[in-house]
Image 1 (cartoon, rainbow, N blue to C red):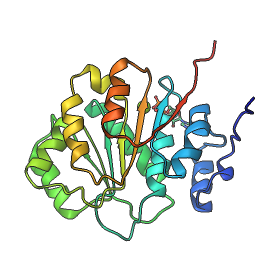
Image 2: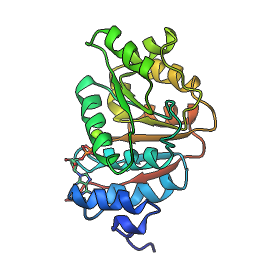
Image 3: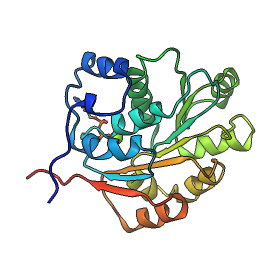
Image 4: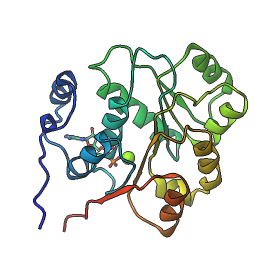
Length: 215
Ligand code: ADP
Ligand code: MG
């Protein structure tokens, strides 16, 4: 028998300033997927997390990647891949809100449908976190605009949708350019067959957590 995990953010190994910021944002209790995924994620484990849309998955991976981040090291340390430009923009906004407690964490968004030039200039100025769609991230890698040698966290958000949209090869190509000892976090609303295959390609003994839909 297992008891329900604690739901208070201050039960986690998070800096007090981060917990205070969460409170200011109105995040008083962890959502079920946060309570299930943050303890293993903050221990550095690879994670496959499944929960329906609107369950707070963004903050689950954002707090984990921020915990791995050294803001004094000005290099890309986290990459979040998302299926669409709209989702990438939302994730960037949420990471910025959650990072407010730390000084000067720079997040940039790299998606298609926007000229390359502005993104290239932003990359030239440096960033700690990149959020983007697989195709555009590959473009910047191919052009030598983006280096991933300091990366410690790779996130695949909405992995089911990225698979459905045919991004599987792009994801694999990007993952191969990340340092092998990184932490990989995969979030998804559903668990189609392809996810296990994708995970087996480049995750290391992932912990799987799932929050069932409430009836
Ligand atoms: P998902 O990615 O699972 O679809 P989101 O990360 O977009 O869900 O979160 C859905 C909404 O819940 C957002 O408006 C977010 O600000 C809010 N939220 C996330 N975590 C918490 C929390 N612990 N307490 C209150 N609101 C939260
Ligand atoms: Mg989401």
